Length: 145
Image 1 (cartoon, rainbow, N blue to C red):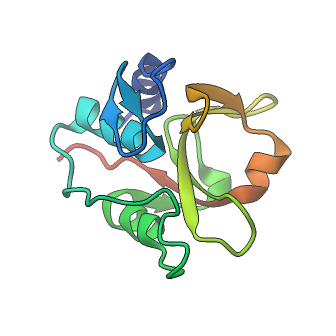
Image 2 (tube, rainbow, N blue to C red; image 1 turned 45 degrees about the vertical axis):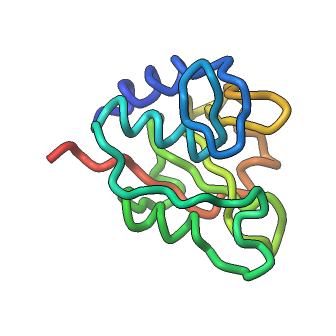
């Protein structure tokens, strides 16, 4: 799938309010909901049902639920190979489970990513050094088959 189409669809979600477990452009989304919505727009049906999840993303059990799902449904990449349109996965603090997703929008001298962030909604943010340090994986949407 072309990165430009992914970025264009993600940007169409900008301004969507943050809503935990939601995935409806303009009405509400969390970070997973944004990625799910982009998948639906570009691929059709989601690859698997998403069970209810808590905001702590299985931290008490130390279960890498989001990392396993990304690996199962997206194409894993070396982080340095990520380009616009690819999904990046973050650990919000050292030693914690991966629990935040975003879509790279620009690379190079001024990298950005689009994500749904509590208290902010869907925004395009600078992929600054503090964010880059938290990346634990990069993934590409699969080609439509």
